[in-house]
Length: 352
Image (cartoon, rainbow, N blue to C red; front, side, top):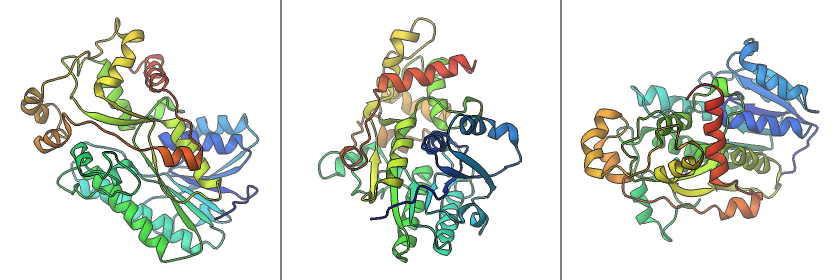
């Protein structure tokens, strides 16, 4: 059990990211000093949204140049910190070179940050952003679970470089983190495993998360013929940030936390948009037959391989979030609020 001194600075890697933005806001509102590790600290325009948050709170933000792939580049940012939030990792599905674009940044980045934690005597706890992708590979894996739901006890054993490279990268990175953590006793590791993160971005101009392209496709007619019959776990980005915060400061927080608000589906997400946006936008109203997806999927989107369709379409998703509620006190927002507020932000920004 680690008690974190709130007068000491807190490091957030990838501080301009989707989840990290809300986490930084929470830390600043709590009056903490945030060491924000970013790629371009001199890019004032890119950091303006974080500066504005800092000005409205009692917290302080300091920027540090860092690079996931460069050994030792987190040394200055981590100095004096008892708590490290490692959120930096890419979420992209359509890649040309999975090893270079996904595996290397996830694995080498995790290694660089955690090895630096071993060399920085002040560090007491590291909170790592992983994913439910490290728990399961495909929806069909639900059939192999002991109680018919995904839990923190499970590990993804079905993804590979050739099939589900993103899921594979998250699995390798988290396993590496546990391996490094077990070889030392100075700091403890707490891992957050969120499902599909949705909800408004704190910085709508810098949105690159795959989550936004999913919402865009529900609005721009791409899926108006129907959505794949596929289950998803969905969680609000603000709830993910809250889970990180609690994982950092709750002394008894330990191990992994599956952070997911809702067991839903593509159609479930579309249906919550219909009352507000169904008349103005071609929001999907039905399921696309699996045989049609089988024919068209690989043409429409290279991530929709036949193997992916076979192992995910027609299968539900069920995750157990009881540990996150019980130990971190996470109170999940309604799906309706998450999806509608995200959609409205894209409307307001002229993105859809």
